[in-house]
Length: 256
Image 1 (tube, rainbow, N blue to C red):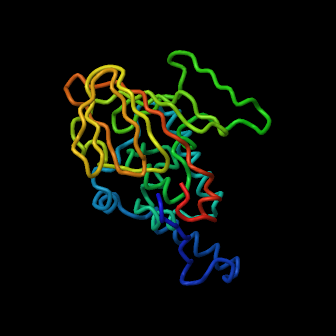
Image 2 (tube, rainbow, N blue to C red):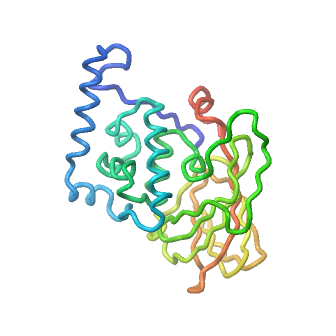
């Protein structure tokens, strides 16, 4: 998102690097302990309906939790620090990392902003090793399938050096509250309606009703959402462009 620069919060008022290692470790452990002791009632009050219990594809949920934890540990951030950056309760983050909860799209989007990662890095195929060919082939039904607030989403391709990621999404939600509201992210987005009728919501514009064969291309940084225009739902192809690496985004704030 242009102009957004996330900084790691200091630990107990000290800049990282100035606190003795032992004290810093104890502070991290204390922060994690406090987050894990948060009662379920407090989590629910803070997050409302922005999360749900894990269900469905446990393998996918387990892999998602592992990738979120790996991204957090790579940046040397505690659960408490990610909670402060994202607004997601530490107890909720812990449940997600330990495969006890499946995040909604809105919660996942906040975690990605805090960790400065692209969402396809969390739910897409693992990145290939250096030197491997870029070409990717996926047979029908062979993509990685995930459930986002009850909507089926299939990641068809997601290669490290590719500039875009195509997705097949089945849309059934009729209300914005069911999807986590309007959400923006870096890059550009292409949408093509394969079947059914879609209501494309983009902040600042009237909802656009799209039928089979219609398409749209827009700046993904503008908050948006896909809703079904009828009870029959819609099946759509979405292509999102990948942003620059997170290290470049840190060095050049606002670069998309």
